[in-house]
Image (cartoon, rainbow, N blue to C red; front, side, top):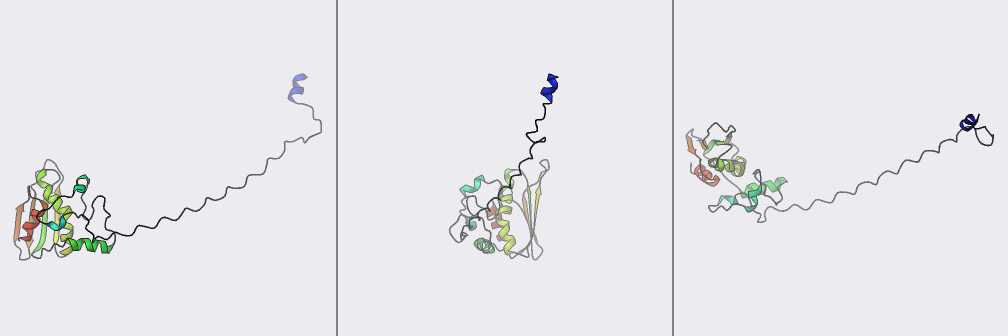
Amino acid sequence: RGFRRWLFPPFSGAGPPFPPPPPPPLPPPPPPPPPPPPPPPPPPLSLSLSLPCHFKCLSTSLPSHPLRLTMAKRIFGRVKGMPRPKTDSDWARLFNRHKILLPSIKRLELFCHRHGPGNTGVRLFKSDILPPIEHWNTDLDVHYHKELDKDKPCKPRVVAITHDDQKHEFTAAGLKARDILEKLKGL
């Protein structure tokens, strides 16, 4: 009998036979405050200032830009540490500073290999000088061929076809980008 008394105590009648009801649920937390408005964008920097450009308008004494040595990919209009052109007027100013006209050429083909020191001039010509050429010479048909296979030999060369259908071809091995441009201007 003692175990049953301990397990089931007698009901005295003083309290409710059932446990009390659970407390009411807590109200939901207040919504988070709205995020602060973003700061206004900085005013655009005019490109008419003396910012360093990619190829300094192709002068004969072409110094290399010291910040360009650390970039992995060369893109026209991008200089590390400088704001890139975003608006149409920024791009127009940039292309006006690099006006390159080739009126005698109707088709231009560039051949290079992915690797090798002799191909550097053609690769830099494609990334730095070709965008303004394509912008200012809208009727020029440009083709760029890059050999990706290491085992296939590919000599860097440039093929230019003039409006009178004469084919001019020269090897670009060891030439710098500005030398390739000077040869094209001489056609």
